[in-house]
Amino acid sequence: MAEIQGNQTWKKKKKREESGLVNIRRILKFLAVLAVAISFVVFFLFIRSSPPSQSIPYRRSTFVHNLGDCSSSTDRANMKEFDSPVHVVITLDTLYLRGSIAAVESILANCRCRENVFFHFLLSNTNLKSVIQHVFPHLKFQLHYFDSKKVQSMISNSIRQSLDQPLNYARNYIADLLEPSIHRVIYLDSDLIVLDDIFELWKTDLGSKTIGTPEYCYINFKLYFTESFWSDPTFSGVFDGRSPCYFNTGVMVIDLKKWRQVGYTKQIEKWMNIQKINRIYELGSMPPYLLLFAGNITPIDHKWNRHGLGSDKITASCNDVDGLPASLLHWSGSGKPWLRLDLNNPCPIDYYWALYDLHTFKKTFWQNISSNVEFNFVVMIRIICCICEDGAISR
Image 1: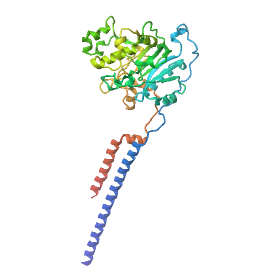
Image 2: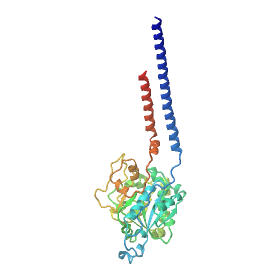
Image 3: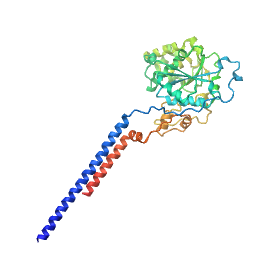
Image 4: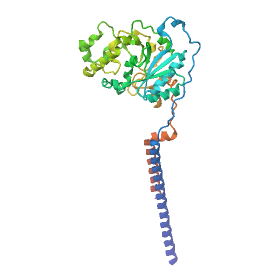
């Protein structure tokens, strides 16, 4: 009898010891998971607080020298205004830097006399000079600082916030920012690529006109101004004697000599001040150009501005050139190719832009972890739950 009671006592003691060991294992397992969780949070905060790499995330352009003899050109021999260099004006800012670099690369890639192209960058942030020097070490260029305070008081809200950025208005002051000795420029937006020789666009004969650009007379011109504009003859009368057509200001050949003589910068400022009071248009910096030049430009072949490629894929389908000849592709609109490519949701036309993209930055493993912290936190919680459920089952 005593032997049976001793066995039962031993079994109970052993059971208590095993139960204690199980509890100790559970506690250790929980502490291990908690340690992992704390380590993950600390590491995430460290990654987020670490300063970004100071290296420039762009590879160098390989297009440097002319292709053949560019000392003279028979089709420009007797035309002084077409003498080299070709002056190209592009804005430069951190938001559109990747686009501006791709635009320059496309010009160099498709230009026979690339050493004869001189770039003028309009910018409000002079720190970008080192980027241009790194990516294009042999590029002929000049930086022109634009003071955003010059136009801030004249800017009125438009349909998209991106259209209200002061640098969008820098093109109004090209004639003031560049040297008086420069009489002609090609102005280009930052969200385009050039597929043909820029000299072909440079050769545009402006005649007596100040601006040359493709115009689109099939577009309803009245949509670019408000009802109050058209109902007031004081405003709408500006088009009397003209047959105005819409044109996109992202690609323009400009005669700066005529611009300065007429004083178009002051006239643009006048319309901007009228807009602040009367609200006669909705589309940012473009309408004053329509008011001054629509119906009074030198029309250029549409192939030099296949615009509208920046449709927003969330609300609209992808636009394309539909097999039409294209010397220049322009992603005007809210959808930019570099953004759609980075989101792995590009339009087919975006792959043309990617051919000239010099951006090289790729996320590291840990940067991917930190950028996907919400996902990883959920995974971690699920792991903890599974461990806890495993403990519950073992009980």
